[in-house]
Every structure is written in C-alpha cells, then in structure tokens.
Image (cartoon, rainbow, N blue to C red; front, side):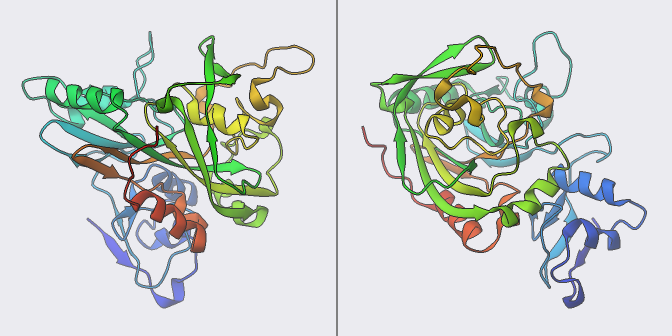
Amino acid sequence: MPECVVSPEEGGRRLDHVLARLFPALGLRGRRRLCGEGQVLVNGRPGHGAYKVRPGDVLCLAETGGDPEASGPSVRLVGRSAHLAALDKPAGLHTEALAGKTGDSLQVRLDELLPRGKERPRLLNRLDFPTSGLVAVALDEEGAERWRRAQEGGLMEKRYLALLEGELTEERLMRQRLVLKGRERVLVELADHADFRRHTLLRPLAALDARELADILEAAEGRVWRGAGPTPQRATLAACRIVKGARHQIRAHAAAAGFPLWGDRRYGAAWLCGLERENGGERAAPYAENECFYLHHGCLSLPGWTVRSAPRWLDLLGGVARAAGLAWLEERAPAPAK
C-alpha cells in the first residue's frame, strides 16, 4: 500500500492538495472524491479533503478490498464481539435497500462485510442517508436479544455529534412527543413524552463562526442545500444523546429547540417546532441523495459492549472544538436519568 509522510514544507496545506504526491495521475476532483469516500487515511483514520496536514502525518490509501473507482463510499468494521458487530456508515449511503430499487446500501453489502455463519447478520438500527456513524449488526439471535433487552430496559446510550445552526448556549433536554407525518418527516407536539427513552439531550460543546465553517462548506462540494438558507453566521458543535430513538428524533428535536441541523432543509428554520409555512403549503420533500447535514453517531453503549467512531469532518474544526468532540465520544457513559 503506497504511503507518504508529510514534510515540514507541506505542513498547513490541504490534504487533497498534498495527495498529488501519492497520486500524481489523479486530478483534484478525484483526490477529493477519495477523501469524501473515506479511502484516504491520515495516521490510520479517514481524512477530509480540507484537513490541514501537519508535518509527520502519515498518508495512505485504505484497504477497501476493491477498486476505489467502483466501490462507492467505504464502510469500516469498527467493533465485533461474539454476537454483535458495529459498522461505520459514511454519509451518502443508505442503511437499508430501498423498496423496489436495486441501489447500493449497507444492507446490500452485509454479506461482503460480515460473511454469514449459521445465521444471517441483521441490521439493528437505521441512520438517514446523510447521517454517518455507527450501525449495529446482530450476528445471531443472541445478539438481537441483547440489543432488545438493553433498548427496552433503557440500558443503551447513543451519542452523536452535530453541527447546529445558531449558538446553543445551554444544555437542553427535549422531551416533546414526536408524531410521524407521512413518510417524510415528523411533527413535534407541545406535550412531553412520558418515556425517558424518547428524550433527546442537546449540549453545546463549541461555538463556531462563519469563517470556521468555510472549510466544511467547501468540502461538501455543493451538496449543502442552498434552499435551506444562507450559511449561518454562528453555529454550534453539539453533543446529542438518545436512548431508544425514533425516526428523525434528533433532527426534529434540535429544530424544535430553535437550532436545526446546519443544512437540514427538511427541518430548517422555516419549520421550527413543526410549524407549517404561513401560506399553509406543504414543503416538498428533498431528494434524499441531495440532503447534506452534519450528524454523526459516534458512541454506542450497552451492557458489556461499547464502540466508538469519530466523524471525518471533526478534523476540519481543529483546536477546542475537535478536542471537545472527541472528549464527548470518549467520556464514560453514565446511566441515563429516568
């Protein structure tokens, strides 16, 4: 596997530019695509194209087991026990095969990623197309039962990192009940949900200004929905915690708190608290393939098993924000408060 070490002269340059030394025949767009698919490792971890390299960083191509031109977004196995496994899903890949369609998905790749034993592996949780991070897999019936017991007993914890529009200044515990409206979105009711497993904790980790968001916006290469509004002047790196989870739970609760995910057109500022547009019209659901926001499932804990994964975009923030994000994912998980 070819690799190179960043020289003192290259320090501070963008990763996708420095990669020209490893891939002289590949253009800038191709190098950015490799980074976006997680196929370029910086010191053993996937690196974003806009990451500013440091002298001594080791750069190499991940072993994907196939042609990077044809393999699609890369998926990593980040944890495995006798009965459970965890995969790191990149943004831009469906968790499950879409009904009536034959496109790529994590489910389609399961047999390749986790060859079946006596029983076929089963996905245990689902992430939206633009959401990255941990997806658990039951390797057998015992694994599925362990998951069910932990989830139903409130003994599971799922930690996320998110970029929220606006400046969240204090911790918020969102208890409101969510109601599914069609297949595209959920509405947030005024009434609280009595089940603590359905609550969402939002905690500010670092405030970001427009200048600090520039590298992330550039790395998205136009995937952020312009219709969601202009780039915010302020944003927040936030810690999010849920137990059981429901469709769009973090997205809807964050919007209801007044801080939608940056770039989340479906739950953007015009739809805070689940309100319809003043003209009463329905907003058209965005095409899933064009959605782009920053939400990453980075830590999954249940009795006797914990797995972690940091988002690729966290390196772009650097400094205090990056350290705070990593600390949140590494922090020992307390028992959820009922």
